[in-house]
Image 1 (cartoon, rainbow, N blue to C red):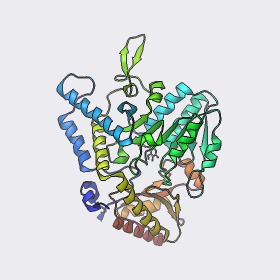
Image 2 (cartoon, rainbow, N blue to C red; image 1 turned 30 degrees about the vertical axis):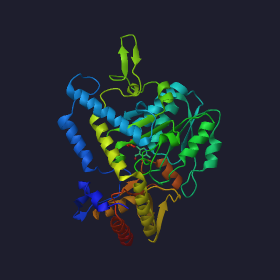
Image 3 (cartoon, helix red, strand yellow; image 1 turned 60 degrees about the horizontal axis):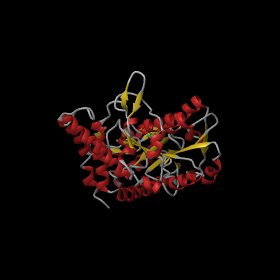
Image 4 (cartoon, rainbow, N blue to C red; image 1 turned 135 degrees about the vertical axis):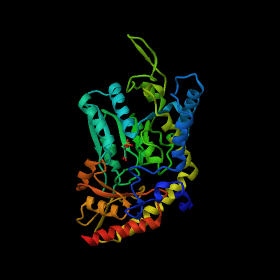
Length: 404
Ligand code: PLP
């Protein structure tokens, strides 16, 4: 497929030892490691083009502005947006969803109105809506899922009413790994005249997404989950929607003119980018997206699917393993429990073997409640993981199981 050993050379962090064991990093759904080019971009940004953007007439400010705006165009191309002013830089998925929840509710929602989410949402696509529910008296409707982790599409369709104002749904579940049929969900919502926000935090690193094909009204993701720096992310919004939403925060950058009596807001996307943006981060995110594009998302997806199938088969051969999320269309995470072993114990003992996995509720407590568990262990894979690492991980799980 592609040369994983060669790719790993671009990620210096992966070659270190933890407790004298080679690091096996399987917590990629929480955050990904950064290729050398991304770290170098941050370093060269601060060493050679650091100046505030959009404000200066001097050389460095113009260079920094150009890099920042070029980064916006890279994001636009990466997700197939029609225009670069449909790309708003935020702090990440969480802030992107909060922005839409707050501005959309302010402009378009009244008491009794409804938002449809799914039962497999991350807290960042639940709590912002609950805050608006308390402020505006809106209600949340929740799409259930089937035993294998697929959303119940019949139930989804039945949730619509004349009060439905928005659907806000996760593209790929960070716990179950399910790749939801968001294209069909969007098409159905649009037939009812309802716009759709898609939380793409776990999708963009693993599968190709195209805004024209999906026809999403809003789409969000975080740089740090796609090999870019932390602290920056993206809100894509169709121009017609972003134009109609009020600003989320006030300050510099988002204004055209200000008097003590009145402010005229800036044009898109700056209306939503109050304050100095993370212009070093945006350029490094663009470098990360270029890196991923050069590897090729279809090749990444094929390789990660192979890792997932390999790991799933091996895990299922261990006695007493329960895997949560067995949808036919699934991305590269395995959430599991082994017999009665507490997820923290499993995580801590794997850590001693140099294996980094996630334990706990994965910021999806309502989902855990529906699964009837307190938490789970999650192994999540990237294109830089190898079958040998999976062998070591499965052996580790087996070892821990035998200890108990
Ligand atoms: N949505 C999903 C599905 C996630 O997995 C995460 C992070 O784990 C988020 C949203 C929140 O992302 P961030 O913390 O980068 O804002």
